[in-house]
Image (tube, rainbow, N blue to C red; front, side, top):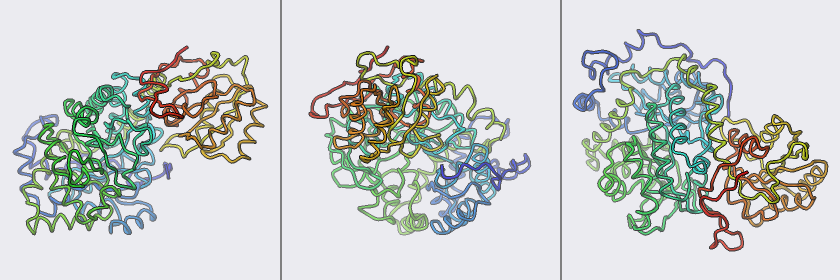
Length: 610
């Protein structure tokens, strides 16, 4: 995280009951029949009445979900005010809402929205207050990308779970449901009601640069079961889950953030491989589905990205799969959706295709005015906007935002990062670590025989809100388990001098743990492991991202897959190395041979134990 400060948020006061009642009075009058606060959600007729009273400008705003810089809705730091002025033309979240009447706001760590849980709750309350005090003000649907594993916007002290591929290695639907239930409860306590998770992509391409370990695995049946379980967990806690990225991003070697991927699957293969997890999500009652900025010629031969494809979003998702929930685009700032039409046409074409929420356009003013103009000139009808707004309002109603838009600081203390939640994350992680190689039963590593351990390896930037660096976390965990461990960071591309330094240090150790990160045939990490093995010291390789590393490390006598370099997964790997727990994970993806990628080295379901 860019800023972990826990000082004044600029908006720390809890709204009084009088403020809450005043701010929600307009909405309450339009929606709620007389009755207790826990009365049933308003029906469509009341929501339609709300829509009918909106101005066209307010309707356009409801379709957008926008980023905004700052830890406070009204008093962000000056640097964040400057960033908002530069990118959005407003100073604060409150000004964003007043000017554009956006229906949603997305939180990012880099936008300084997520310093710590109490501040996040204050920010959420400030956003709701600013929106509800506007004429015909509506509650805001606040969202974030909290996938866990390598993608998380809210860090410590919130509970951070293993990522999807690790959960896939554990293979437990109960664990996936528990993850969703706990993570959802913590997000809701901070005022975040929509999570862009789970990833429903089936990762069948080891070279996938953007999905990879964010996917539950390569088996569509297993992925479907875990997607449905996680959806049930999140939505049981009152947070909208979001299956992504429709129609499937698991077989690409292009990152849609920076390019325009093409999926070459036939329609038949798409039905068998990519569609099942989305069908499972829909059957589980998924609240929202996110589109992918990629082309699937077998589903739409126009050359348009799926986000802008009416045959895909309306023809397949709405009509064929029967989905009538909210459809949200992936970020409109990504190259995959911008390359063909430009930023003014994209939001209009997305709405024509069947989208309901337009996420994070690079230029909000341009996008907002483009939609407004399209309606005024007849390219989009107001009725088309109304259909999407009604879906968004139904979701806000289902999530309780009309009844209870604010959160209490006491709820943060009761829910976020509790001892029980942290323990649950550790237990789930212990079922995910996968042992792939264990020559001579090197593992579990004996403290008596190998008391002094050197931890070397890659230290990629720590995922949001985790401790890092990975070598330090591993060494610290091994020390707590009774070893004398030291860390030596060698990086993802160690030089000859760095390798020589590690080899020299290894000679003073009894054993070496090497954290590897996406090893390739020509990677200096491979040379590092080979030279460490040549010292005669036992070497344990821990793949801290893709499990495919093992194919490039044939000399390592022991290899583990941890699937991520977050604290919870590294601690689990250390406990497995020390024999405190037995390895239980099974590969959720196949690992091909390095010298012959057509041949499988380790199949789905492979994993050793003690």
